[in-house]
Image 1: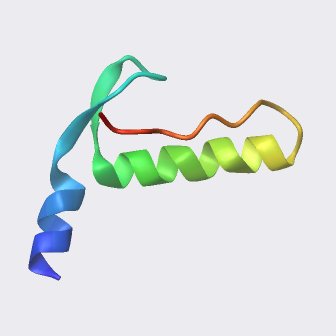
Image 2 (image 1 turned 135 degrees about the horizontal axis):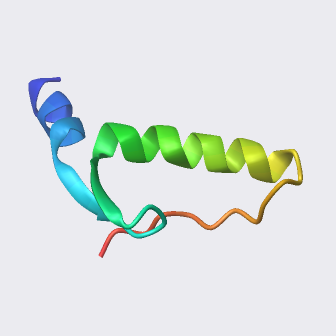
Length: 50
């Protein structure tokens, strides 16, 4: 669990926002984007780390 929590705190470049955010924030942002897609508000594009 400790390693998982450490991973969630690591920062990664998130191109849709043009900034670095934590993996925890990536999960939340992807959930929000998927919800908007389900409501037919936007096209969902998954985040693919490189």
